[in-house]
Image (cartoon, rainbow, N blue to C red; front, side):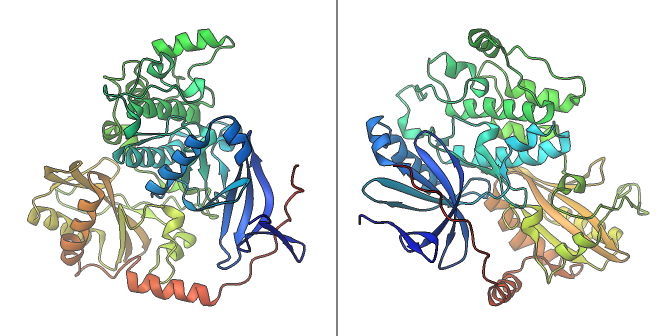
Length: 463
């Protein structure tokens, strides 16, 4: 096939399948365009790579590796590769479109609060941990490679510098120096071989620092001096950093990779595990959350429960007939479950307490009113733990959120399905996101789907 871009009704169409729109960005070897699937109406990003440039610079193996890696990885926080097409002169990656742009753009507007940074950091570590479990290491993590969709969901992109576990030498270490200098680990700079997992942890630590401080922990006009600071981990945290955040950063930015924290340890750190408040969702919701909280009379074992009052937008979004869970957490259905109840908070608390006793789960109440249930035996990924938080939607109408905070996701889903859902049937009014309800909703959405507005034509092709 020699002609792959057709001009139809003043539109540029790729292989009769994708309408090509505006230029989103470009690099040395590729251009990225906004596009739309003509059959489904889905918006995508198409990465057009020049074959000749790739062949001349010997990067074809890297492109093939990027394709194999992206096909291997399927995670809500990793930019999805839908398909790959090729012609004599071009390679086309059809990618998930991240409407929110780069996370880097948020930093340029000023530093983030710890709560806002935590929301993105938790998603980053979730993606990194998932990739590591499949033998995939990114090696070039930086804010510019972290994208956001329209719901503020983080998407890790640009796997071009990733290395598969199979590329390790006999010592089990990677030996190719990749990444951006300010974000790379000391052992990567030394070129002595390194653990891809520990290198990604270091880069994630630098990203976290930048999100909250709005500047790099290691910076110097002289590149050699910056390398020295990185190798010795010479940096200072601003005074406004919380103690918990400083402790986490000290663990992640340890120059000794053998001592440096792993992703599993990061997930257990107090700063990481602190629940994200509704305020962190302010970019998603248009209304301001109410500040009403209530304490419930309880016995000495219960203590007091703090209820979060939700606004009108939240009520609609959490209701069983209007499932907007993706707006609030992209991992819904994997590590989180919600149900509504007409029972009192005290009754819900008592039922959860009885459930924990019957299933031999450790049951504790945190300082912020969140209830924690944990197994007493280690599973595939350590102790399985989940937090239960009660939200007051209206008088005598509650929303209960059950979120996995540690352990294996499959074990969590099995616990929810086999034990928790049946045990809570007497207090549950409705579970959000039941499959039958979701199918009905999706069918209704498809029937009412309106045509997408026209998109701008492609700029003239460069010769």
